Length: 198
Image 1 (tube, helix red, strand yellow):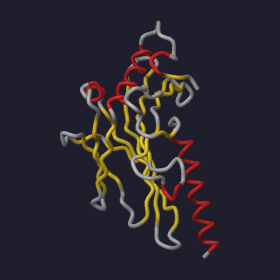
Image 2 (cartoon, rainbow, N blue to C red; image 1 turned 90 degrees about the vertical axis):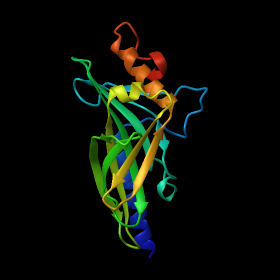
Image 3 (spheres, rainbow, N blue to C red; image 1 turned 30 degrees about the horizontal axis):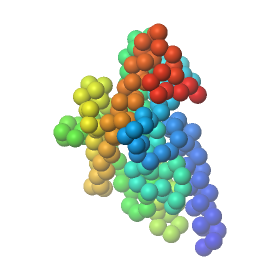
């Protein structure tokens, strides 16, 4: 029993560390207070030809087994250096016990479908009941972000019938867009509008 628990914790720790490296989100934080603008990290080393803007990690559920860096979401935006075109995502990592959920669809708060991106799905363990970690995202049109001054809700659904609604506060949307707008304007330094360089 003790060896099984050790393997579970080792597998969970490995999954958490791998997730932290792959997601490249900023520090985990609770929903930001209204008086403070969330910090958006500008990364130029994620992919050649692109600048990544990674918003703060925010819990959508309690950390899995109390492990930091689990069960969070963040906004991610990628700007093409040449064309200045931007792609936006709501990235989610979800760890849980029970039957595999198989997240596979997303919709906005009006019920319109959003493009779903399956990123990763792993079994953590099945020693004493199964547990899983899934990483996924929804593509967010820039027009939707800019037309959401009160925040944005995205509902994810799964093959198992589960649903999870992630509510992105207006402050996070505003900080993400301000960071991107500052970078698109060549006269602005990278540290403008609440962004930081790595």
